[in-house]
Amino acid sequence: MTLPEFIPLIAKVLICFFVVLTLTAYLTLAERKFSAFIQDRIGPNRVGPLGLLQPLADGVKFIFKEDVIPAQVHKVYYILAPALLLVPALLGYVAIPFGDSVEIAGQTVPLQIANVDLGILYVLAIGGLSVYGLFMAGWASNNKYSLLGGLRASAQMVSYELTLGLSIVGALLVYGTTNLRDIVHQQTEYWMMFGVVPVPKWGIVFQPVGFILFLVSAFAESNRLPFDLPEAENELVGGYHTEYGSMKFAMFFMGEYTGMITLSGLIVTLFFGGWHVPGLEGAGLPANIIAAIGVGAFCVKVGFFLFLFIWVRWTLPRFRYDQLMGLSWKGVFPVALINVFLTGICLYLHHRSM
Amino acid sequence: MIIEKPHLSLFQKAYLPEVARGLWITMKHMLRKKPVTYEYPEKPKPVPANFRGLHRLIQRPGGRERCVACELCLTACPANCISMVAADPGDPNVEKYPLRYEIDTLRCIYCGFCEEACPCDAIELTPHYEFASSRREDFVQTKEKLLENNRYVPEAERVSNARTNETYLRV
Image 1: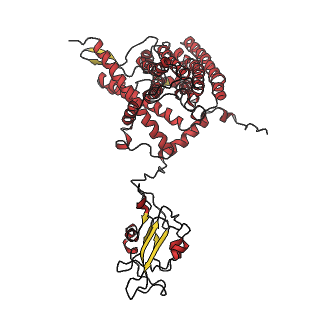
Image 2: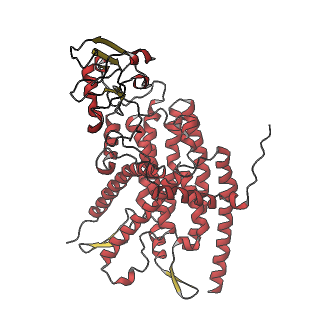
Image 3: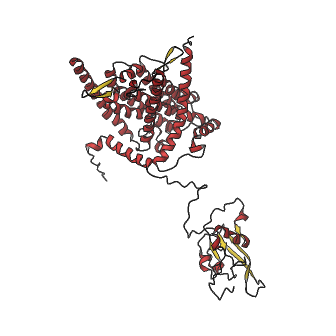
């Protein structure tokens, strides 16, 4: 008996939804814990062992807080904005493959919610939608600080959207596909360095510059320090979410952290071989176990990049706005163009020599 | 005033090496440095030996206070927080004793002048400082309370038999 096709699909959706939201909650704790460790403090340790129940307490607090809607706001947009930020962040995860296929009850289930052919474009496009949430929040709050925060957010995100897309063009030239699943499959192959050392064909090996540019753009795109000008606390009170409280405020935070998870997943998929563990194919394990290890490897890799996001945040000071724009248009953008150009030449020469 | 832009080398202008250096510094803090936090209510911060906290009246071996009601502490007190009524104990060995001895700790500035002025080493500031209360009366330290405050110092220091000044103290 084979399962109807929609059951594994629904299971995958539910599991992903649950895992991403839980991870989002625990990222707030990780953020506070790691910031504490970096600053020689202890961090939250009152709720549960090692403060592990802190996200739960925060959630309860947010839900039971009075939901104030200030009198001067544009009500519809004000209420819509947090949802418009959170939903695209959650949707982006749909196209990212988190594991190879598994065999369940005679059916091959690919560990990815939707195998979109234009996967990478889909993720970037959906991610780009979140700028509407930010700007709508800034505008609807009818408050100078919020408006400035929203303006900064939209200008920044539009600028870095460009570099985010351009920095992976080189990688896409190498892979020759925009399907994220095919991209990961290509990275599971090996390439003999100097004809002797086998190196997995991870994106980082062929596109180190593209990776760094993408990483910088990802930081800017997720509005994290050193590029968190939209919410620059010491200049703009809280930026676009100044007027928000209780669960709406929490949704902005969830949107930010979910965006981080999606971008980390994208980085891992494009440049670090997704679920691929080098050398595991030869170990002679059953396919399902290899797939499970792959999911674990994917989580570890994503976890590292989430840690990097937090680590960088508590290390670097904030950029000035002109520096931010300068970095985008005068730094990352030209380098990304050169990278595309050089990648094209290399690929041309490579194909001619074949 | 013109502030000249600092000249940055190409290495510094490239951001990333300097970013990596910063990350290394924070990583060292994360791994090596012990937290500087005092988890206060559970683990009290150690106070120095000469910390000036709540007062106590030192006892004689019999349990009676060493104070001879000379009123020097009261005179020395810049905050006027000590009040005293002296009386005759009817004890041939003790000429005078404080019938009432009260310190209003809300007025006290913890300068320690009382302890300096005392010729008998009868009053002392202990390292104890956690005596918050929501009632005003709790802050007036009566003689009985001051004698009980001996519990905030080590057992050996609670009772003193030292003959500091024979003129004032005949044990």
